[in-house]
Every structure is written in C-alpha cells, then in structure tokens.
Amino acid sequence: MSRPRKHAVFVTGTDTGVGKTVIAAALVRALVAAGTRVAVMKPVASGAERTAGGLRNSDALALLQASNVPVPYALVSPFCFEPAISPHIAADEAGIQIDIDIIRQSFDQLSAQADWVVVEGAGGWLAPISAARSMADLAGALGAPVLLVVGLRLGCLNHAGLTRLAIDSSGTPFAGWIACGVDASFERSTENLATLEALLHEAPLAVVPHSGAAGGNSLRLAEAAVRRLEERLTRLQPS
Ligand SMILES: Nc1ncnc2c1ncn2[C@@H]1O[C@H](COP(=O)(O)OP(=O)(O)O)[C@@H](O)[C@H]1O
Ligand SMILES: [Mg+2]
Image (cartoon, rainbow, N blue to C red; front, side, top):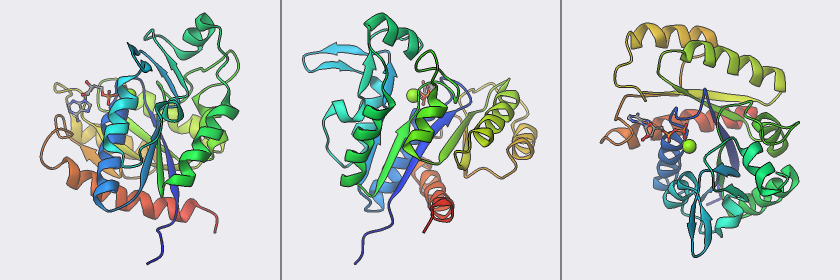
C-alpha cells in the first residue's frame, strides 16, 4: 500500500494559553491512532526545566509523548529557553539569535522521517522571535498551512478576527480553526461560535468543550478534525 500524502501544519493560537498544546497533542494522537507517522515540533520554546539532558519545555515533551517518531529533543525544539518570557527577549538575554534557517533544517529532517509534522508556535501569530521576525515569518519559512486554535474566552472575537486578517495578509494558507473551551465560565458560547464563524469566514474543524480534551470524546473529536484537516491540506497542497 502506498504511503499517505505528506502533510505539515503550523498550530497558532489567538493568544498564549488558548489550547494550542492540548489541541496539537490531540491531533497527533488521532493521527497516530490512524497509523500515520507523526513528528512534532515546538521550534521556539520559552519556559523550560533544567535536566541532565539539557533544557526541556513541557509543550515539546507533551507533543513528543503523543508522537510516534522518536527523534532527538534538539530537533523538536532547537530554540529552548529557561525563562517563561517572550522568546525574543529570552534569546536576547541568552545571547542567541533565533535562526529560521536552523528551524527549517530541523523541520526538513523531521519531514523526511514522517508522514505528518505538527508544529506548535509560541504565543500568537505575531509573537516576536527577534527584533524583526515573528511566528508568522517562521510559519511562512516552513511553508506549513496554519491551523488557528481559538481559546473560547472573553476577548477571543477580536483576537480571532485580527489573527485571520494577519494570516491572510502574510500569504500563508489558512488550514482551518478549532475552538477550544479553555474557560469554564465562558458565557454565550453558541452566540460567540456563530460570530467566530462569521469573522473567520468558515465553520470550525472542531469545537472542543471545556475539559473535553481530557474527556472520553476528545479522540473522536480530534479524529473528525484530522479528517477535515487532511481534506483541506490536500486541496491547499500543490500537486
Ligand atoms: N478543552 C479544555 N478544557 C479544559 N482545559 C483546557 C482545555 N484546553 C486547554 N486547557 C487548559 O488550558 C491551559 C492552556 O492550554 P494549552 O494547550 O497549554 O495552551 P497553549 O498551548 O495555547 O499555551 C492548560 O492548562 C490546559 O490544560
Ligand atoms: Mg502550548
């Protein structure tokens, strides 16, 4: 049987703490359950623990745990910083330049070993990685379509609308969006989801309710989202 078509997706969010890692890991688990070889990346990470093996970021570890392509940590997270601060400040303090070419090389090595590469950004779409470059530049350099995770909380409409505008103006293809119920006290969820659909010009690939990511139906939700995502990516990918 021939291998499935190769895909990559860059997971961004309306903000930090909106469910990018939870959703990315759920997608990875759904892909793995379908027999796909899935590599992961958290190319720029700030907020890390010192270990005998070096600095380790919890997002990168969570993604690696879900993945079924065992690769060295340095390929998954080539730029990992200890303080939980904006990566461009952490890099500056460490005297390191976040080099998109190095990330691209790691990404290419991972792509060679996998059918899918799931990349989680840090922060939101325009989060800076240096004085002049942002997550948007990184996603563009990787050539990976963008999946937007919208954290359902007050303020998400503005953040979602702005992010969609910025993704469209960057020229990086929009692969879809997933709503994530990060806030148990979020009110008028139905009305807000309808407004998000209007602002983002399309229905979500999935709506993950609060605590749903940990619940029994998360894999089913993620599997459905993966099927829709694969259809979108196949259409976006030049043949
Ligand atoms: N659907 C959900 N239900 C409950 N808690 C969630 C849900 N999605 C995410 N969370 C929690 O919200 C926090 C932020 O999620 P995370 O995936 O780490 O966001 P990000 O990667 O965007 O920073 C975490 O504590 C996570 O466990
Ligand atoms: Mg995260």
